[in-house]
Amino acid sequence: MGVGGVSTCEKVVGLLSAATGIVDYAATRGLIGWGDRVWAYNTVIEAVGATGPGPSDAWVLAKGPDSPAVSSGATAETPDELLATLAEAAVANGCTADTASGRDRIAMRVMGLLMPKPSEIEATFKGLLAEGGPKAATDWFYRSCCEAGYVRRTAVAKNVCWDTQTDWGSLEITINLSKPEKDPREIAAAGKASADERYPACQLCIENEGYPGRGAADPMGAHPARQNLRIVPIRLGGERWGLQYSPYAYFNEHCIAMSSVHRPMHVDRASLTCLLDFVDLLPDYFIGSNADLPVVGGSILSHDHFQGGAHVFPMMLAKTAAQFSLPGFPDVSGVVLRWPLSVLRLTCEGRDELLDACDHVVQAWRSWSDESVGVIAHDADGTPHNTVTPIVRRVGSDGSAGGNTYEAYLALRCNVTSANHPLGVFHPHEEWHHIKRENIGLIEVMGLAILPPRLVDELGRVEGLLLSGASEEQMAADPLASSHATWAAQLAGENPNLNVGNVRQVVRDGVGLVFSHVLEDAGVFKWDDAGRAAQMRFIASL
Image (cartoon, rainbow, N blue to C red):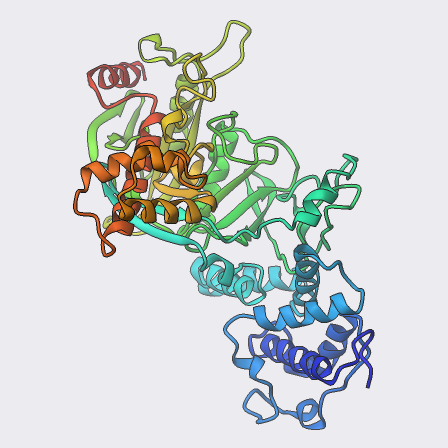
């Protein structure tokens, strides 16, 4: 039997196996009902441009997942291999472009067809929230997003991760390999695409839910497929927001809360109110906002959003350097964290008082200048430079998540530039750019480095050159290692007994220490006498 443009027996069998497999995968995980399997099979083969072959009678009549006719897809850990086979069939049948994003669009389309509708997801989430509590609701929603292939567990597992002990405690290092590289053909096509008004306006808009995606040759440019995205509506600050999980999670249950309105990021009383509303709704999660100014903000400043999850970050384990109180807020306890960035932690059992105190600190910092340490609140024309990266969570008496005490971490940020530091005075300095030059956003403020994928090959070459005893000049002449030559030579000098057994650890520890220096650069009040005095002047002003 022919299958679109595919005629070989092997491909027919492969399509049959993949189609029954993905349906059984979905049915055994509750994404579809068991009685939906035949409908789902036909829907899947239609999506990939096929009209057959048909499944066996035994498979059609299987009464449950224990039937011997059920395919091996029922026990697959992830749907990735099944989706890859279906995507190849779609390419062969002319249903999608022969590119990485073309295959991804088909894979996400298939999973979108095999998922509950958004209204059904919302109803189940709210039912679990009412009956079992916040954790039951988020556990189910997160698991569903993983099983539907929206959270790319296989891709995330490719990330290279380790911890490095530093003067600031143990920092978490990640070389991010999970986001797919762009196909060269798509890069070329993107250069020819026009810049017409785009829909959705950005990747954080709620209009992404179910969107089919587009290739780079589309007049509106490339956009990822989001057919299997599900967003739970939530209320923050009296407005509709959406809760989803990040497809390329940087930490446990990495979630995103985004405004239903495409508007710029802002850090003010309204956004602080939203953060508190979030932890009241989901007290087992922390939530935070990127700063709202270039250089010190995150990568997407055009859409108002927060990031949260179930992770405990190194910053949250930092020791106390000093304690302080805030006049007018008697129940709020303040501490200066011993952390490379300048972070104040405010704690209170009363939500309203904590909100007032946080708002007071943010407004005070917006107008604070101390030129002795390079902090300038505004340019002469009124351009602002000071802002805050706020993080909020609720903790119990033992520090565990979900308690009745509110904690707010306020990382003080300043985006001034200078002739010596044109990319930012409180930004990774040039000597560390061989490892990290991007903005220090919310996640990195808390001690988790997100480093570029180029480092896998570059650091591998550095390890080899160190083992060979290469000089700094020889490393500088190597295309892969050249940017790291001075740093690598220093590592060699500090570790005279490098060998096959320890070189990787030495290099990784060196990367972790670079990240600690990057965070120190981002701190507005340094850990020297001048910086300590300047920080206490600001606190005294509160």
